[in-house]
Image (cartoon, rainbow, N blue to C red; front, side, top):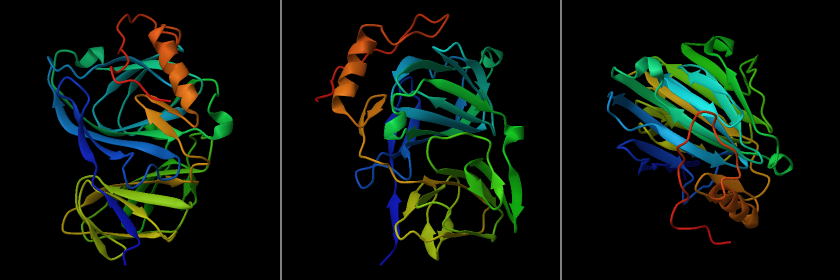
Length: 294
């Protein structure tokens, strides 16, 4: 019997024709380590008239983790942060008790097409940090450890692996790796954290001797390590994981909490325009018509 759970995800339209592949949460599994939301977007060519901007919207109880392979996104938030997100950087936004942010096309790309391709994750904050003060931290690509492990190139985006430690601070033990495998190459990843999964971004691979198709998230169920082997094509893989969640989480719209009543309160706060606003922005995404039932 296979010790792998394969999650194929589903297409999710975020509006304006912007479609992502959502791997988590899934019916079979809410999270891998702290990560309970996993969107793969692109590669997509963004035309000058595309409506892909994400207007201001709120979050609680989580941290967003944005990572680009190609393209650029302009992040603004209610703390006053303004940051152009570019390939290779890690952008960690702790929502905690509440934050509002927007994600838009950078002004420098307003009049020309460009390609956006990346991954956005949400990490549930531990119970003790669910109401932490909101923060935004940009770690540039040059500060992320990158090393050769055999024939593979590994970037340690978050956590520790192969003797390297990411500078990105987290609230619980967390692992996030960007692995590039040349055709035919193999990489052995030990059981670095209690829960681990691997996502094949662009090409099929062999995982522990079993085939793994592209754009499938495989979760290791027996606590063992991962043996990754590329086929005839080079492959890019994202490894995610960490300590398991300390309690089940409720997820509704952009809110995550261990308490249903907290989500109800967050929805009321957003409707009352009591969660702050992004300086210089007047637009906002309204609550969904279908409300959360406590």
